[in-house]
Structure formats: structure tokens, C-alpha cells
Image (cartoon, rainbow, N blue to C red):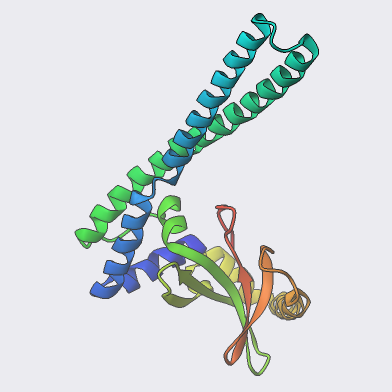
Amino acid sequence: AIEKAFLESYRQLTSNNKDIVNKFLELIESTLNDNTLEKNIKKLEREITHLLNKQNSLVDLRLEEKIDEDLYEEKYIALRKEYSEKNKEKEALEYSLENNNQIKNRMKTFKTMLERKEILKEFDRYVFESIVEKVIVGEIDENGNVDPYKLTFVYKTGFKDGLNGEDFKSPRKNAKNKTIGKDSAELSSYDSNHVNKSSSYSSDDTFRGFGNTGSRELRIINRENKRIHY
């Protein structure tokens, strides 16, 4: 349901709204211009080269018998350990860079779509994760009324868009929900209790409640780039 709702939210936001489209383009441009990984890899390469030079200098000192064997072994082992750690860190960053380049290629395609005012016809995980900050599932208003199907997309540009999740469920699931009224009531009660219990969670928690002007909402944050199922 969230995937279908996102497509509709995106369509509504970008249809004839030049300001929002420009904000999205700025966000994408910022992503494409981010070369933090490349800089960190180059920094590690310099550090690794420096360690190799220190290692070679240490060997020369030992060959010239300017340091004893015990001190040589101690320093050599320490240098090799640091060298190994830096290499592993560099390999991890290189792997991340490869994935990041793939994402940037997808974002370039998305940027072209925005510039041409084309509609996003299929859900794209990379696009979703690049422009959506979080999805709020469910809502409790100031009177305590629960709406477990409310979906609110909070975009990284600051825009918010709320939709009814029931409108995007498959017919089979809609039919099931209509026939089981008791389960629906239990779900509302569970959601309400969960908000109250979650209100003290830290900002790093994946699932928590928070206060808002005139309402309380149930928040699910997509922090780990995992697809949310609803």
C-alpha cells in the first residue's frame, strides 16, 4: 500500500507545481554532487602510503642495527595491524562507492524525468529513499480518535502529504477489513496504546510516538533503507 500511495503522493506534488519540482531537483543535484566517499577513500590511501613508508623505514633501521630486535618486532606488528585496519576500511568504502554510483545513475534518470515532467509510473526504491525522510503510519487526533490507515509522507524538502492507506490496498484486503469489525477495533486500541508506550523512546528508535499541534501520530522511520510493508 505504501508503494502505491507514494506514487500517488509524488504525482500530486509534482503536477503543475514548479516550486516543489525545483526543490526536488535541488535535492537530487546535492546528492549527485556529494563526493564524500571519494574524499574519504583518497584520505585513506594517503594514510596507507604513509604507513608503508614507516614500515620500510623501520626495516631499514633494523638492517642498520639502529634498533634492537624486540623493539623492531613490537613496532612492526603495530604498523601491520594499523595497515590491515586501514585497508579493510578502504575496501568497505570502495564497496559503498560502487553502490553509491549505481544510485547516482538512477537519480540522473529521475532528474531527467522531473525536468521533462514525466510521471513516475512504477515504484523506485532509490527514488523513494532519496526524497522521502519518513513515513508516518496512523494518526490519533486531539480527541483520541484513531485512524490506523492514515499515511503521511514527509519529504526531505520539508513537504508533507497525507493520504488514506485504505485507498491503496488490494480489493481482497479491503474486503477482509470490512467484514472483521472487531479486529479493526482491536487494531485501533493497540495503536493507541503503542503511541503512549512509545512516547519516551529516543530519536534513534525505529518506532515511536511524538507530539504534534492538535494531534498525536504514530511514526515509522525508514532509517535503514528497508522497504516498509503496510
